[in-house]
Structure formats: structure tokens, C-alpha cells
Length: 91
Image (cartoon, helix red, strand yellow):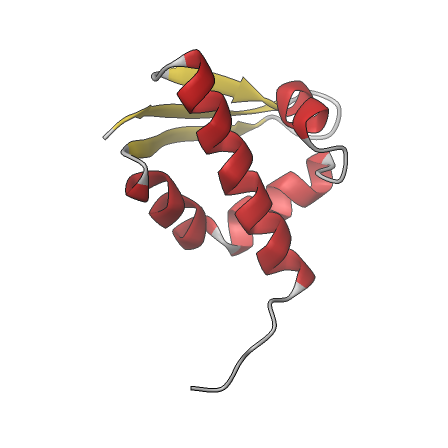
């Protein structure tokens, strides 16, 4: 099988999943993770990038969470400047 380099979106999606898992491990599940907490973990993840990663790579994000025993319960995006949050629970 030939090597296929990951796109920037796929790399950011993996980073988003890793951060969500790290926060859930640290805080304990169920947990709600807001954009401010994600930005502290990785300034590269802007609110726009987070929303795009969720919409484009939701399957990858959910697969990464389920591998670690978590499930994505909800994602809320109230629009620009109003905030967004992920709700993660044990699988």
C-alpha cells in the first residue's frame, strides 16, 4: 500500500481528537469541553478550524474517541463569538 500524506485538515482533526481525549482523561467523563479550553491546548485550533474539523471529519473524531472508551454525546455551535462545546461521555 502506498503512503498517502495527510492533509492539513486531517492532521488538525487528529489533533482535535487527541486534545479532547486528553481533557476527558484528565477531567473524567462526562465532561463538556469549550472552545477556550481547546484553544489553550492548541492555539492552532481556531473556532473556525474546530467547526470545520467537526463537520468534515466527524467520523474520524468519533472513531478516535471510541478507541479510548469515550463517545461524543453532543456538539453545540451557537455561531461566531457565542461559543461552542463538545460533550463527551464514557462509552
